[in-house]
Amino acid sequence: MTFSDERINYLDHAATTPMRPEVVEKMLPYFIEKFGNPSSLYSLAVEARYGLDEAREQVAAVLGCRSGEIVFTSGGSESNNLAIKGTAAMRLAASDGIAHGGHIVTTAIEHHAIIHPVEQLEKLGYEATYVGVDSTGKVDPDEFAAAVRADTFLASVMLVNNEVGTIQDVATIAGKTREASKFLGGSLLIHTDAVQGAGKLSLNVNDLGVDLLSLSAHKIYGPKGVGALYVKRGVELEPLIAGGGQERQRRSGTENVANIVGFGEAITLAESERIESQDRLKQLANKLVEGVADRIPNSSFNGSKTDRVPEISNFSFLGVEGEAVLLGLDFKGIAASSGSACSSASLEPSHVLLAMGIDTDIAVGSIRISFGRETTESDVDDVLQSLKDVLDQLATFPSAPN
Image (cartoon, rainbow, N blue to C red; front, side, top):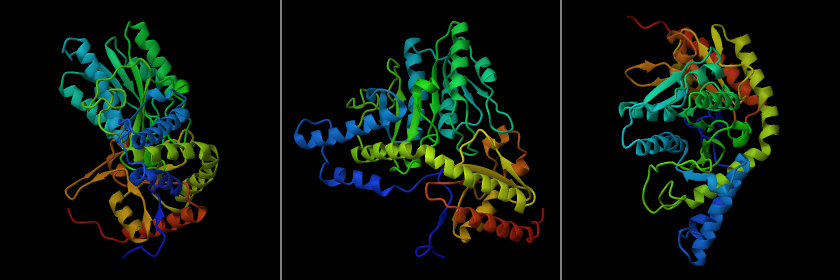
């Protein structure tokens, strides 16, 4: 079955978004007409440099920072890795190569692009604390701050959870964490993974109180393969990629000018429409959550109903696997995603849902529905009816023998 002649009800915007026509149009000249290397001196290169500089200023305007504090990367994962490993490497250099004693505080529900780099550092002798969350996915700022030690050099907490949409009070967490570090005679940096926050919340870095902030373009209708890391003036990072010294010696390699230009346009458009978009999507999110509760037995909503972005809703359905629900929805032309990592051999429940205290047998039956700028009320009606149909059908199948 194909959907080439039909509109797919795309409800997986937290995974990626289609590029906006305005973004594509802004990028096109940099593939053919303005293809110069921005590090060169001739006029063709100057045109590319102008596009690069303009995009840097656009991102900085949304973050309320200096353009020189923006480092362009290949995406959110690289930005997170640079923030974590770059600060750890600087600490290693300052301690004559002795890593033992360096401590990182983060949370149990971070994206794997945070958790896995931290785990890699633990294998090298660093130590880490993964602070838990409550049943809605919220971090207690006092508990987070209490995890700080005198040798804590980095604290990382995501702004918006990618699976359940819960918003963390980053500003309060950052303030309390700094106070705790100062009291212990330490000094640390605060990082936030704001990949899911762009276009949904204010990203003013001064209000958030952070030193480092990660972004990715393809979550906001920009191109894949480009992101940014805000690095507060005065913060030193050891680069992950060494070479020609681009991005002020922080990320070498000829810049992907066309994608960066698209990123600048995408984040500008997202910010200009942010408040109006959120008001509309809140109504759709309420309709979805209420509809699932009313129509589908043995269902549960995962996350906070108040401190969350309306784009992301996560549900569990007792007695079924999320993968089966998604396949049923896909057959009906609806694209959603699961909170579980599936393979042919096993079904692993989401680490986020488990950290929230959700039982494994419930967590494996979870799906994520994430709205976008083109999602309509009829799309919500469609997914509500389709969910009911799919779950009714799954309920008629006999259980597999042990």
